[in-house]
Image 1 (tube, rainbow, N blue to C red):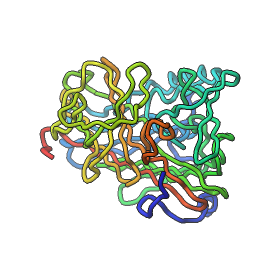
Image 2: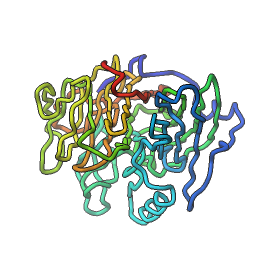
Image 3: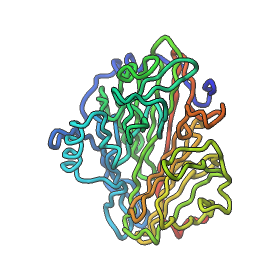
Length: 383
C-alpha cells in the first residue's frame, strides 16, 4: 500500500463548505420515472455532421451518481445509445425488485456504475450468520457485505447512495453536473469519514467523469475508485467489434471462481493480447480480465464497432488509475471497460505484499479519479 502522491492528491476544504457557497438547484433535465430519479444534460448537434459528437448523458443521483446512458450523433446513424441500458421504466422495475433482496446491486448490471471505496471484488473470512466477510487492512478489520455468491464483496458501497447538491453549469460549450455525497463511514463498513464530489462534463468531442473522495474524518483509510460502464456495440455484431488495450500485463485467475492467483502474465502473444493499434477481435468465449502496466499517454483502451463505423477512446487522466478490467460475456453486444485504481481482491494475501492500487488516504486529503471518453471514426485513425 502506498501514501498518495501529489499527482493523485489534493488538499482542500471539505466539500460541504464548497457546495454551500453556491445555491443548489435541480437541473432542468431532472425527472422521475416510476420512482427512479434521473438528471440529463443534453446538447444539440453542431457543425459538420460527418464526425461523431456527444449529445447527452443521464445520471441516477439516488444510485451513487451512476451514469445511466450516454448518447452520441453518429454519421449515418443519428442519435445512438452508447451504453447497454434498459429503459428508465425497466431500470426502475429491476431496482425496485432488487431492493427487496439484502445487499442487492441491480444497477451494476447496466449503464456505468461508479465504484467506491473499492472496485472489483474483495475476498475474506465469511460469516454464515449474517452473510458478511471480514478482511484486514493494516491490522484493522473491515466488515463488508458478501453480496456476490455469498463469499465476495463486490463493487463498493454506494449503489444506493443519495447524491445531494446537484448543480449544473455551462462554460465554453461544455455542460457540467456536480453533486456531493456525504458518505460518512459507508454505513459502518469503513474506517473514517468520506465526502465525495462527482463532476460529469459533456462536450461535443469529449465526456469527462471525475470523482474526488476526501477523507473528512480523523483516521487514515484505504480508498479506491473505479467505473463499470457497459459500452454498447450499436451494430449488434460482435464479430465485427475490435478492442485495443494499452497494457503490458494481465492478472492470472482461477477458472473455477475467477479469483486472482497473484501472478501477472505478459499480454504480448497471449490470448489477451489487444495491443494491435487497430484493435483485435473479441474472443468467442466470455472474458473477465484485469489488465495492468498501462500506457496512459494515449487511449488506455479503444473500442471499435465496424458495423456502425464507430470508435470510442477511453483515457485514464488520473495517474492513480493502475488497472483496466475488461468484461464481455459470450455473445454479448457490449464490452465493459473499467478503469480503476486497484487490482482485483486488493487486500488478498495472494499478492504477497505487492502494491495493489488501494491507496492510503490520510485525513484532509483527496483522491482523484478522472476518465475522459472521446469519439472517433475508425478509418480516420491509425494511432
